[in-house]
Image (cartoon, rainbow, N blue to C red):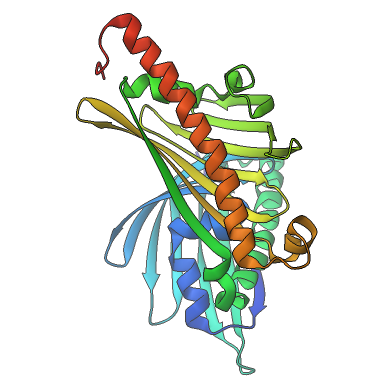
Amino acid sequence: MTEPQTHHTEHRITVNAPADVVFALIEDVTGWPETFPPCVHVDAERDGDRERIRIWATAGGEVKGWTSLRELDRERLRVRFRQEVSAPPVAAMGGEWVIESDPSGATLVRLLHDFSAIGDDPAKVEWIQQAVDRNSGQELAALRAAAELRTQRGELTLTFSDSLRVTGAAKDVYDFIDRADAWEQRLPHVARVSLTEDVPRQQVLEMDTRTADGSTHTTRSVRICFPHDRIVYKQLQTPVLMSAHTGEWLIREAGEETEITSTHTVVVNPEAIAGVLGAEAGITEARTFIREALGRNSTATMGYAKAYAEEIAGRTGHPAAH
């Protein structure tokens, strides 16, 4: 059997920021969901300059998950990557980030890919080519925006958590969060839900949420589920005040109880502040507004998850039956 044909692509962009700033954004792979629109979630294990990453991203309108090996070359400002386990229709894929200083003081970023398709199917080759072109263009544009806004980046990004103790089983708490398709009936701040799970543990959740003033906003998220202790997500469609929003539900046994923690990471959209909060509002007011709104909804969800798990524990007579 002959090996599938290997195809090569190159995408490039010029960034008005120092090369080390650009390299740092590429190196920080766990921060990619807040930087790169297609990226949903990344788990990483590092050993020196080598790391294995498990990554989930949208490609061609679908959610794909794969495992890659990366090798960082800080001296030459390069990052090589090779998919260890690819997702169909990809048979194999790898490539390299190449960061070069421009004589003008800017930075040239080249993103190289090589790939092959299962069975050398021309339709699959075309699908992969389009996905690589689309995602590479989005990633490079987002990389440039993040690097050029580096002085504001810290101020625009906020991460916060809320926790709640539950006298009930971790699995029952997890099941409540996992079954978001039932939230319309279970959560008063949820007006409408559409949940699809074509691939086990990879969910697409569209939801209309009521805000404190009685209005509603629509969000669309990808959720990756790790039974029975963690669900991570990224909003693909966010409220206008946020340019990025990722989150995590963490469910842990804590002695005789279960602790549930909701964590949000948000990047504020500064251009939307005046339209949403008024001409006098700034980044501080936007951060406060987002913290209160998201914290209120997730704390309410945790409260209903607590009641659900504790009701089951009361019926079974085993509150700590984890």
